[in-house]
Image 1 (tube, rainbow, N blue to C red):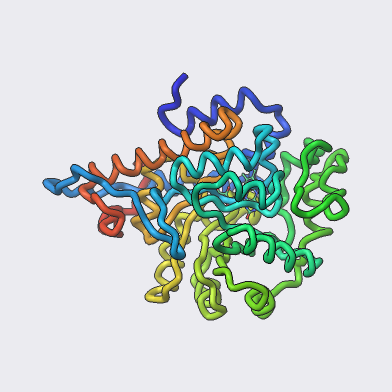
Image 2: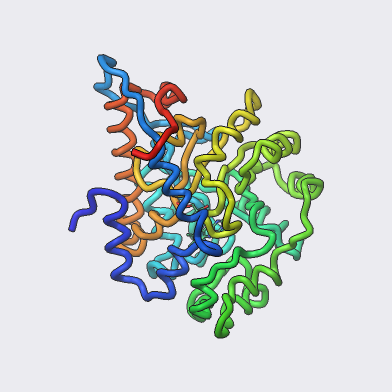
Length: 363
Ligand SMILES: Cc1cc2nc3c(=O)[nH]c(=O)nc-3n(C[C@H](O)[C@H](O)[C@H](O)COP(=O)(O)O)c2cc1C
């Protein structure tokens, strides 16, 4: 089957993965209300097409923190890509490069930052959690700069891991042959220890991630690096304002794909609030959560996102066909975005603004 839309990759991937890995990828926190809400929010978007506009060339190109991108659709940070494909993040980097897309590498990557950078043709950002061991955090920031990563993304919505029932029921743990190689075996040991009724990742997060971190600590991170600092996991106007006040160079509106606080707003419903709060500050807002087509990407861009990130769809592509699958997913979403731009009479991303959408009842 040639995939015609992103959900085709989902169906193909499901056939290839064992059920524990599938649940890890697909699952959300709690009753998965927020996971479902992320998707439902897009059904309430209707498009306002303008006609008799020259759409003979629709340009999806954009610029983000100084880097040129062929597409505003990028790769969200997701852990342990070797669960999906033997090449892991090396394949993801190649696929993102083919698509001309941004790739945000997770601190729980299963390939080294340096090896990933060697495969990358496009910009890389490194995502971090605030580890209890600050010297490890500092070393990662240094390594990222040396390897040519262009920004640090601090994920701020996970002082504890979400209560992911699927992983707990499965006693999910990371298999011995796959590991977060950038953190070293001692720091990662508990992530590999399976136990009935609990997620090893929840145990590991409690051990490794510092839940006491506050806005005041960001200065410490800023002092360690000249790389731009991006905060991922902002959902309110209040925190958007604090992020700008504390010198964030960009914000990612995200509820972690419904994997953290169950009951949090759908990402799309929080987007306009955050964009409005950031206002004229030179702080681009990115978006992730539930984007499953170029039309969804268009909706988020129209509501003020400068770029959108795909989490699970990239993992589906990776499982199905390695680098080609990742490039396929990103390429398809970009093709659909360009098509939506043409049929709505908005040939450049600068014309994709709030006049292009209405948020109302589900179609
Ligand atoms: C399997 C999986 C692993 C993830 N790992 C991380 C991670 O290591 N760091 C992080 O900031 N977010 C992580 N996320 C969240 C994604 O960055 C992103 O916010 C989310 O997947 C977007 O929603 P979507 O999957 O609906 O596109 C992960 C998501 C999934 C599905």
